Image (cartoon, rainbow, N blue to C red):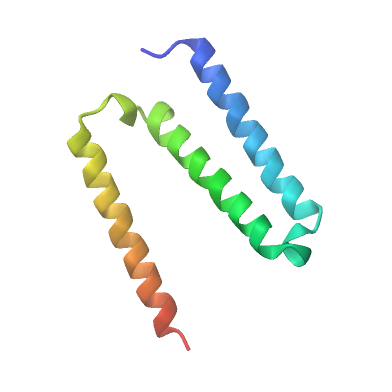
Length: 89
């Protein structure tokens, strides 16, 4: 079982990363330094997804096979999204 202190630290990390993402958008960095802002937002989103899936959905304590199954599903969803984006013209 994860302690309240761990949950609080994760909550604060999620709050700070969400605040940074909003600040990047509000400062207009997406119009001036697009790729830096884009990758900043993408990396922070990945960090938040890992924290939420790992601790709040308790995947950190599950067998690795379940995590691999989820990664296969994620890979399939990304592949279908990529294929769909190329089919739109």
